[in-house]
Amino acid sequence: MNNKNSKEDSKHTTPLSSRGGAGGGALKHTTPLSSRGGRSRLLVGAGEGLYICLKELKNVLKDQGVLMFLIIVPLAYPLLYSWIYNNEVTREVPVAVVDRSHSQMSREFTRMLDASPDTKVAVKCNSLEEAKDRVGRGDAYGVVYFPEDFQTRLNRMEQTHVGVYCDMSLMLAYKAIFQTCTAIQGNLNSKIPIELSGNFTNRENEITTKPLDFEEVPIFNNTAGYGNFIIPGVLILIIQQTLLLGVGMAAGTARERNNYGFLVPVDRHYRGVMRIIWGKAMAYFMIYTIMAAYLLCAVPRIFNFISLINGKELILFCLPFLLACIFFSMTLSALMRYRENVMLLVVFSSVPLLFMSGVSWPQSNIPSFWQGVSWLFPSTFGIRGFVRMNSMGATLTDVATEYRALWIQVVVYFVLAHEVYRFQIGKARQMIKEKLKDIKNK
Image 1: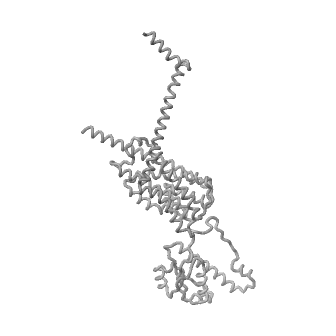
Image 2: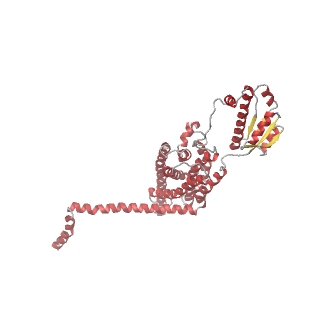
Image 3: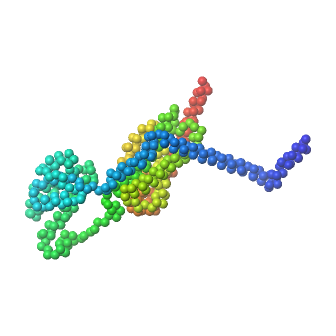
C-alpha cells in the first residue's frame, strides 16, 4: 500500500518538476490564482459600480424634482435667458423731456434725441415733478431737463448744463439714454468752436473740432450687446448650480427614505467607497456630457452668440470642469438632510458666484478675501476660462492657470467626496452592528 501510494505521488509530482522544478511548478501554479483573484475582485467592483450607476440613473428618472433640475432646467432655462437678451441692445427707450428753455439749441437736442435708434421722446412735460410722475408710471425710463437759461448762457459764452435723470433699476435703459445724451452733447459741442473760429474750409473745421481723431473698433463683442457679454458665463454657472441642485436633492431623498437617515443605502452593492463614487459620478457625467454639449455648443448657435472656441479644446476644458462640479456636488450633498435644503444654498449663492467670477464685475476690483472664497467653486475658473476661449478666441494654453486650477479641484473634491462617503458607510455599519447587538440581547 505504501509503495503504491509513493508511486502515485511520484506520478503526481513528476509533471510539476518536469515543467521547471518544484519551485517553478509552484510559481506557475500560484500566480494564476492570485491574478485571477485580483481580476475577479476588479470585475466585481466594476460590476457593482455599473449597478450603482444604472440605479442612480433610474432614480433620476423616477424622481420628478431631480429630473427637473438635472435635465429640464438645463434644457429650458438657457433658452429663456438667451431669448430675453437676444436683441443684444435696447432700442427706442422712452424718454420724457422737460424744456424750460424753448430755444433753438434745446429743440435741436430734442430732435437728435428722438432721431437716435436707442431712444425716443415719449412725452414732453412742463416740470420735473410731472416727468417724475411719468417715470413712476412707466411711461418713460429717463428725463432730459433743459433749464431756462440754457441758450442764454451759451450766448454769453458761458458753460451751460443739461440734466439727465435715468431709472437705474434697468441698466440697459440707463445705458441707452446716457450714451445717447453724451453723444449728442459731444456733437453739439463740436459746432460751437466752428461758429467762433471764423474758418473758411471744412478741413479747418475738422482740425478745430477734432485735432486728434480716433476710431473705436470693438474687438470681441462687436455688437456691444448684453447677451454676448453675460450669457457665456451664465451657461457655465447653470451647469454647476443645476448639478448641485440635482445631486443635493437626490442625497436628501436618500436620507429621507432611509429609516436611519443614511446617505448610503444598506445594500450589498454599496460595500466599497470607490465603487459608490465611481458609479454615482459616472451617472452624472453621462447626463451632463449631453447637457454641456447642448448648453455650450447648441445654445450659442441657436441665438447667434459669438463662439470662437475650438471643439477639441472645448472637450478638454469641459472634462475637468464637469468632474470638479460632480465631486463638489457629491461633497456638499452630505450636508443635505432634507430635499429642500439644497434650494436655499443654490438660490443664495448664484448671483454672488457670477459677480465673483470676474465677468459682470472687474476681477481687479474684487477684494482679496472674496477672491479667495471664489476659488472654492469650480464655476469661477470655468467661467473665466470659457469666456476667454469662447468670446476672445483664447487657446487652452492661454487659460492654463484656470485649466490647472480645475484639475486641482478635481483631485481635492474627489478626496473630500471619498472621505465623506467613507464616513457615511462606517457610520451605517456601526449603527447596524449596534442594532444587531440589541436584537441578540433581547
